[in-house]
Length: 276
Ligand SMILES: [Mn+2]
Image (cartoon, rainbow, N blue to C red; front, side, top):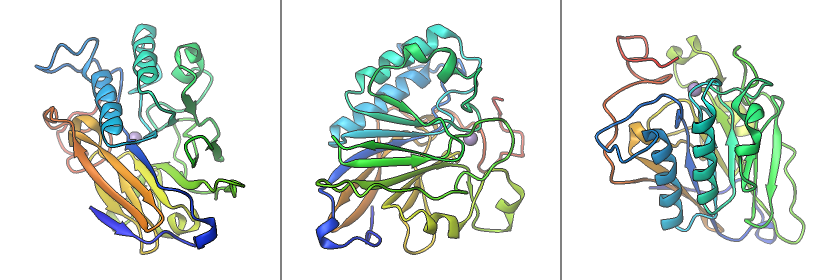
């Protein structure tokens, strides 16, 4: 649990308290199963349902999924249909940011099978950034979608935040990439630099690509990797309140899968399993 002051908020513009649930790197379409194999058609969809349930248990009124929701853009339609049903059952708005495994492009799952996504789902489509306002929840969500398989800066641009009028909206930024905190990350694709996080002027930055829960970012930001459901065993709960933003990782009770790496993280260059 941590708490930090919200940036640049004045008392009269302070939104009402809202809780959101943050997950990433669900990797639907790997076909991965476990001994928890009442989980038809695969663990990743059961993980998605569990993350939404954790959100509901902790009072979340929206969910964000920060990249690599699908393992690849060739995921077969029955799985997409099952995913859409699970998203519909989330019972809250869900904002999805496409990542490097599931970039938003004409042949992507998000386009080919768009009709399987229920009305509560909002997919960020634009590489240069897109703002999705959810005034019924009290939040606005911005992110830059991966839109091809090339390297890109997922926080190159800055959001044009809405003032929200009568009901101010919390500012949630999403980014799927590697936070650069040492020389090591400067060798990686999709770099996210400290000064770019600050420039977002967000109350909360939800990150994805690394698969363990972690707080990152310079002072003045509140930025977290949520942890992948199957690696971290849970989801990240974000309480946005007038006295500050507090963030914690909560467990679903289903054990994490055996160690494996979809993308980044320790062992990425070692003998660990990659799925792409
Ligand atoms: Mn990734």
